[in-house]
Image 1 (tube, helix red, strand yellow):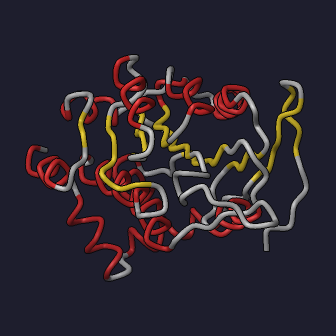
Image 2 (cartoon, helix red, strand yellow):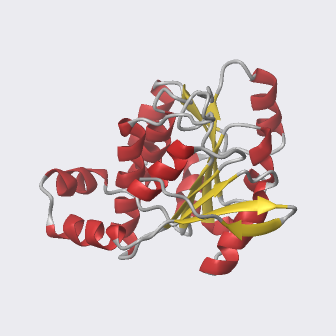
Length: 237
């Protein structure tokens, strides 16, 4: 574990919680949930309201899910919870076979509660990747909290540290492969990084089993209106 964490401190990652504590909590994690704007991207919007993602981060989420699969012989629950409607997030969740995509969710714990009830999870069994104020209601109660760095928000970062909202702060900023960094860290903390990479490289039987099961996941799309979760119909293709 020390060898893994040293790579991340070397690039500027900050362990707010001791790495051994994060590693211990990782044993009980059953879901990986991501904010979208400012995490997969810089937060900049196009006229349509959409914002992009990159394939480097996408691969990071896939390798993390595969590492989980090798450890637990089943898929983790995965979701994006966004405060805004975002066509790129819909497309990403559908393509990557995430379980849930929440959009226009002003109070994000409404979405977390819904997911936990449907999947029989507790908040401490969730790892959450976030960057801003709207995310704190989830970060307050999740098991592992990864704060995506933004150099323009030093007061906010300090607030998160002082009030125990973050376990790790990425060296990379949103839109600059922060998701890959965070996923790489957790994948490494599972303790079999070489196996994950070798298996994916050679498209092993284990990886083929994983990808077959992943393709069976059909993304469900929701929004929250006046604290009520509503399913939405969308065509992310």
